[in-house]
Amino acid sequence: MRYYIIAGEASGDLHAGHLVEALVRRDPEAVIRAWGGERLAAAGAEVVKHYRDLAFMGFVEVVKNLPSILRNLRFCIEDIQAFQPDVVIMVDYPGFNLRIARKLRAIQFPTKIFYYISPQVWAWHSSRVPMMKEVLDELYCILGFEQEYYAKEWDWKVHFYGHPLLDEIKEKQSDLTALQAGDIGLEENRPIIALLPGSRKQEVSRMLPMMLNALAHYKEQYQIAIAAVPSLDSSIYQSLIEQSDLSTVKLVVNKTYELLHLAEVAVVTSGTATLETALIGTPQVVCYKTNTISYHIAKRLVKLDYFSLVNLIAGRSIVGEFLQEEANASSIAAEVRKLLQPKLPNQENTSRAKMLADYAELKKLLGGEGSSERVAVSMLEQIKKGS
Image (cartoon, rainbow, N blue to C red; front, side, top):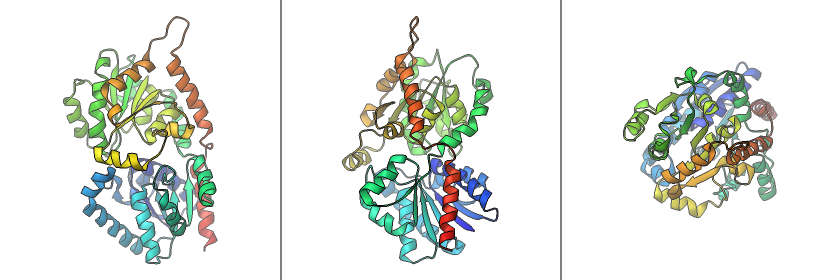
């Protein structure tokens, strides 16, 4: 069969890569064309548009880049029409993907449309749901409460087969167990603090300076390392490091899980990385900043008690969150200090111990391992139903 996959971000590329591997195991003759990145390419897809060219964040940034976004939309529709897929699989990235879905239905293009990783309509923009029910053939969620939400609020039966990160972390566990700091270019026998400033240039430019300032106090006792993504040039990180007081900070490129495994604490930009950090078992502080105008627009639209994925899934506060004005060097430094407090005689660091215990409970809410395999089986069954 012929598959067209659209993943517009690093996390979508990661999950879509595992899904494609599972699909190919069951459909060895599969022909796959995709928007994504290195993971989809490694899984066997022909990547025609890299996600680094698509990552526009916030209301203001979208407006500024509207001509480019419109060109991408036109190209995508034309490319799908030329490719003639049996199914289009849209992975997260709702602002773009739902527009493509609507256009395909408007022109009556004869293909199934599956959506993998539900848009977060339970947080905001629930007005999208009627349109989603109309244009999507199947919707696949990766959070259990989403399935209940769609059934209860919208009378819509959607799929939930677990969260794919459980498998992605499990695959790494044996390698991580024997890992040494020297294996990723860091010093042995010196504790590590990891910084995860995001996967987009806008995020890194906004978050990394604040993170570096927050950890200036720790530069003598700890080695501080940045989880750098391969889709961004290292010069972006280096220029920000040079402007800080932490000239000895090191870059660890494309080895985020390895760095998290070795780190005592991580400072993480909100997103999928917060859940990855929790599943690896590293205490963390979560922070996020966006354009001021975008933030105030979102604040009026989004009604949530938490913004980090860890706390949202748990339905309670597990990790410390710092948003917008609260995301500053002094707040982050204070939270890191709590997680690094040395143990007192015959006592443990209760902040750290509680977070690790809460992580164990979090795993139980994610639906078990084997998610990508189960989703692939379901998708193939649904395609054959319409054949």
